[in-house]
Image (cartoon, rainbow over all chains, first blue to last red):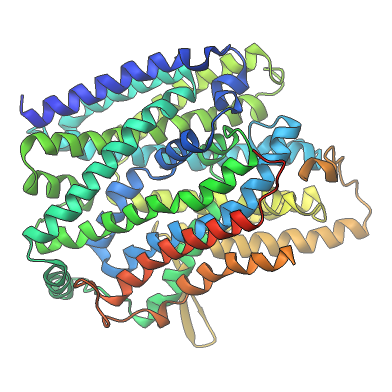
Length: 498
Length: 63
């Protein structure tokens, strides 16, 4: 066994032990959903910073973003403005949601939608959207882990499957046992490993490649020579695409079930507000990691699957034992969000879809959520086994397009009860259908080109379908109000938001 | 008066969602084209703006 494989194995086993030990953290009764799923809503600024950082910066950050920059040049850097403007949005939206969720005991966004609109169909629609959108995101974490494991096998990606299965079975087991406390504790290890790895990579790799100027100039000439040429700058036709991808992704980031789960685990509204200002530090890491895509080009790393460029880069420039540390950072970096995504999706099922079978906040509900966590993890593993993922990020971006369709009901619902629940449901259905139709028409690309008035505009599908959703929701609200159709009961009141 | 502080939160959108103003190679910093270091700088500026916002709008009964 190489020293890299040894370091990686020790790290994975170490965090597994931590995951099980986390069940004793705080001595809580884990048969209560708020304890198992939300860590008892007890996390302070520091724990939340590690947890949210560990949760939001995923295999997307370490694998998919550098792969995209490696593949398409400047356009791939949209992740940086995305991870910047997500925080002002989070600050405003989540601090308000945290208050009403705490006061009314919500565990999910769909809990809020049920309370706010008194509409069971809308509640289930919101819950299922979260579950469906979480799946490609969990699959992306598995793809990230697979790129690491594949290096140690002569069989490549296929040889990675046993290791992937073991890692995910362990994840299912400790998440079942400890709930959110497991990823919260492991996040300390994850974030430390990530900071160490990225700082080492940024100090060592560009220097060995002759400095940033040389990295950028060799990337520029290599990108221009590709069959589909691109550049380290945007083409004017890409401005709109770039801005809509950043804005659309930022709007959807914090309504994903895993983000909501970590946010609701915070002890106070102030913890959320402070973290909105402190978390951008991770975005700086994301930006530096993105530039590793150019380092890979400058180092003439050729990968059939662009997802492999970061692990290959580490293996080329780091001593073997430190490659193990970097690999551990990627694997644990994927395990933490995957665990939280499974918990978040399971909460939506247990609390909102299976409500008839699991009475609210009972130990049965907790058991349902725990079992569903295992089922969701197993399903994601099967997806990765059987579905080829050439550009994992496209799936995740499409998931974002679906996720964004709950924006009117959830985010706008935090401020206004003007929309009619049936109109919101119709808008959601139209937005969802439009997303799928555009994705198919664009060949499962995240962007769609609109041809109108003699010109064309290529933008992020998520934003186009959100506009359709908002238009339908508003129009039908006017119609249904005129027809005096029952608006459903709003159980929240103004004081719940203050 | 309090509402005025929300303008701080709008600035990052103006700074980062307008590619034509930063889609340039020069001026470079540490060999990095303007396009890259400008956007990385906005990460830090945004953190500072949010920090200021959180500070000036804090409520004393919060912990």
